[in-house]
Image (cartoon, rainbow, N blue to C red; front, side, top):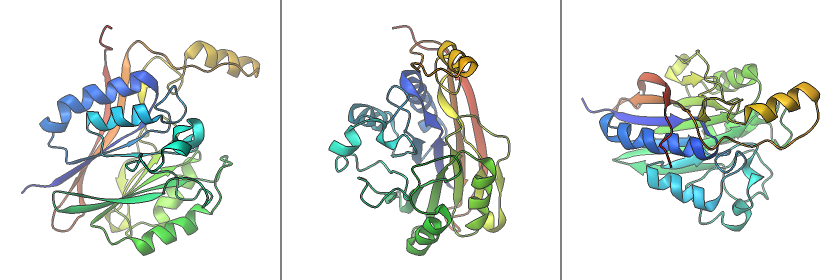
Length: 266
């Protein structure tokens, strides 16, 4: 029985994150028969935001859609080219005047997929609408076979509560933002897949993708300083592969991805 496979890649951080995605997909997309690829792209460009250039780069590697988060405005291209970046999704519950959209539908090999992006409100200041009410709206409009929700939030409890709130009404709630893959993948009631955080794609020797030395100094002293992302070194690749039944559209299996790879020499 042929199934339908969706790969969700964690936050892509800087050049090493982009390299990791390229190398992983070049080998695994065909080998693992992956049908559709979602990735969180809010840290793709120098750790903050997603430029149009890097948007096109990731699509060329085989990413089908890019979600975002609280760094959505980290690059000005979102304001200039939101119409051209039509395979990117911003948090649905930003202000309604924000460019871009918070949910999009796609079709692949006879399967319709809705991908939505929700921003948590705990410790995050950009959220304009209660995420629970936003999920109500997204569930109400969904008519697609599969509905994947990227819950971009700081607090683990908030992510779980949001996922439980729509359990049985969406296909998967996958957490992003904290860049550390959690060990709590599970099926909730109604066979909704949940993972608190899918992790990140970026520098292995880093603090959630950022340069270690500058992070240590800033954390130690409390003095603001430049936060850069490593451009060379070992790469971490995080994601989750979901396998769906083509008839029932239910998750049959899931596989966490936590791999390291060496950076290719320039």
